[in-house]
Every structure is written in C-alpha cells, then in structure tokens.
Image 1 (cartoon, rainbow, N blue to C red):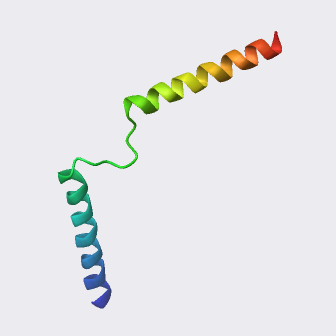
Image 2 (cartoon, rainbow, N blue to C red):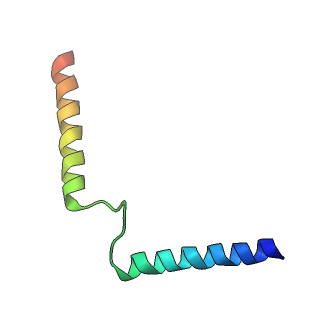
Image 3 (cartoon, rainbow, N blue to C red):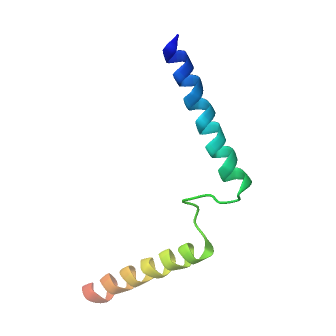
Length: 55
C-alpha cells in the first residue's frame, strides 16, 4: 500500500513538471533554426574537407 502512495506521488510530480514545461512554452532539447544551420554548415565543412583531402 505504501508503494502505491509513493508511486501516485511520483506520477503527480511528473505531471506537474510536464504541465509546467508545456505552460511555459519552453521545451528543452528542441532544435532551433540556428541549430539546423550550424549542423548543415558543419556537415558541409566535413564533407568538403574530406573530399579535398582525398582528391
């Protein structure tokens, strides 16, 4: 019985955290345009660098 109460408390805590994240419009880990541009630039630099190195 005590385990069930602890689990219910944990579920409630997790639900409050997710509600807080959703209400604040802050999603940790989501990628922005800057992240995609940086990833694309890094990919191009690596591909072109290895292409020139191998040529």
